[in-house]
Image 1 (cartoon, rainbow, N blue to C red):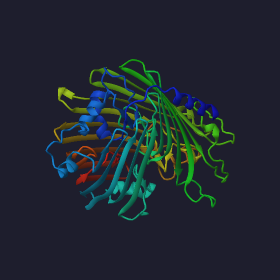
Image 2 (image 1 turned 45 degrees about the horizontal axis):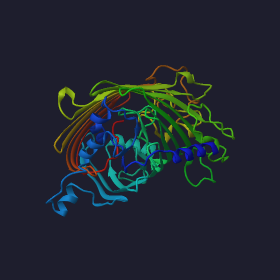
Image 3 (image 1 turned 30 degrees about the horizontal axis):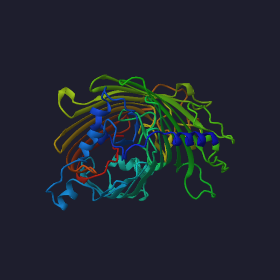
Image 4 (image 1 turned 120 degrees about the vertical axis):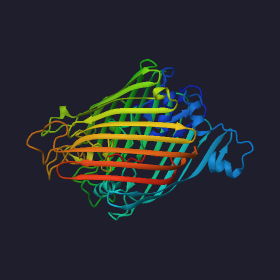
Length: 529
């Protein structure tokens, strides 16, 4: 650990000229895909796969970003009320030494689930505030207090897992009206163009697609320390340490909360050329205490900046879970990028052939489809073999609070996703289709989709191919039409429609729903599972 702090100190001292103020932009696929023209242009050499972005004044995407948020809009002659409703943050301060902004974030929806006729609704009161101090420090926090009634399939998920998908713990404990709170916060220090250190409770997404088989933003936010280092012009290194929970692991009287686990993540992104890049990823999940209640905390050997270490060598024996993989992209045309990922699970188990545990992704995305300005698109295929991400010790599965850290479908699936988005003026239209096939458990036999189950008990007599178990098909389609009111916090009027069908030999579950609402925030809310 001493060597790590020595390296960081040297980088801080020789980090180069101080850069201009950074803008922290919370990750939302709906907003980030609007940056396609700049992010995936062959004329830029940006590191695109680690999200959320910290956008500097000198960044190649800053002009487009400023345009989308109307940061340089002329407000001459506009009343105070007009500016606050449609152009500015609720509170906004800009000084040569610091900046500050704050917004109230409503997310109010009402709709109808026609499959089992009932009214669905969402009542969210939220806030966001952020800013900078000098050219080195930035901060951001958001919080949401929520109540809502969900479609039946989401309600079943919440009652089973105990979590609002990707958000937080359900405080209603199975009641029809769900109640939950969510907070994110991040403070950061960036002394120059070389290094950025961020500390807080947030999510991290690694990849260039809609899903990620390496690390996604599907699970709820977790405490983290993230270090980003630019090693020259073409190489970026990310190290992150996270503190996660498992509400289903064996509890002990000495623990007042859920069982905890540590996560260590490393990622190196290399821009080979302006068009081609490849990234190398590895992750380690380690228990804080074993199933006998023997507490050993965070071993200092986990603070290891060395990349691709299969075992980080804890001083106390522990059932660590390690994974590694690759992320790559190639800008085949000026406005089209092909991307992909591979993940290999290095878990050791005497009952499952661990060498067969893997997941991969292949897709392409771009902008101005058919030469139509601002018509963005994405098409991708994701798949994971049975039992990938799981472990014989469930405490070290690849999940946070029983929700996958990668694809929401877990493992043992094949999935296709297609998304089109078109913006014209203040109107935004988005359509999405998902088609997936996966294998569910039959009675108490574990066929490998649920990554929270131990992978060495209740197994089938033989291990088959992807989709083994109760063969199930998921069809999903969603469309939204929105009118943007204030780009600073994505305040909009939105109408949405959703169709979902999950079929197998046992059941046929259908959902047809429409919603209408006044919405805001840049958070990703997932319904496509």
